[in-house]
Image (cartoon, rainbow, N blue to C red; front, top):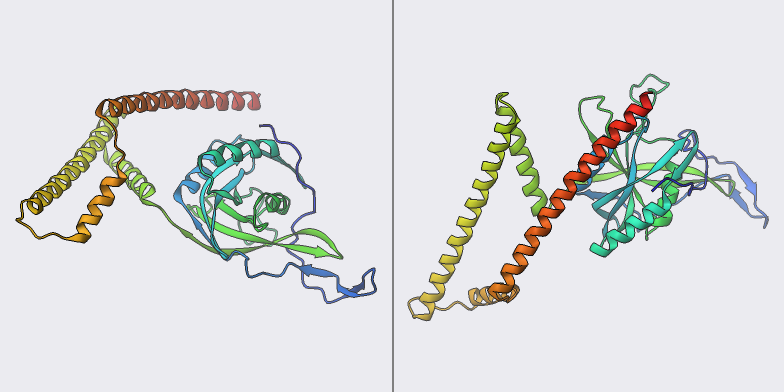
Length: 343
């Protein structure tokens, strides 16, 4: 996964470019403008929808970066809802290195990770790339924080234009500089700048951005918020008490959910028995809904179900064990790298 030079240098993104009305003679004696911008087509993206999983991954990637790294980048996965809207549902980190005006990206690493993700979800495609905010000095005009987009972003954007199916990738920037004690999120699309027939960079136009969470993400976020609130309310009696309280709350929530499910099954069974005994009138719509619900449940023998359940439980415990080992190894590696860098 070491970065390799994969991008063609097309120069810095120059914010000083203006529409130039001067002209030059083309080889076929036609008159062409010296400065061109790609026109916005009917299929150009104007709106981006981002899921919480993506933001949590970007923040985790930024937190685990090496101290010498200015920013982190990665590939965005998702789908086109329509011609002008992109939904970002997943992402993964990509190693890269920036030295002055040159950028190197782990192209082989990106290809391998993409093939692995495609095995689990073929509906997701490359829709763009993310980056944490560029670090550096403040603006020369004294307006405060440095710009969110680095000059080398045009080179990375050109690379992802070739990776995305629509050749119109979105650029998601998560502001991790905390200049105002908050984390802002912005989405951009790039317009190529052509001077005298040669591409020299990209202009980034901000897009409408909205957050969307599905039911599992909403449950996880609510649980994270509740856990954080309950932990903050606990007096400093040590971490053991906090773990016990969190585990007891999780168990209580599971018990409540199972009681509700059992009550619903009992109510459904009573209704079916009353209809069969002629005590309640038949309803064709309810009957179809019950039939669809039962048809969606796979028919498995009890012994086979027990085997599947226990096998899945063992797999889950093994994955948890391996993830804890990996987390420990990564933490040790980060501390060793920090110690070697300090020396």
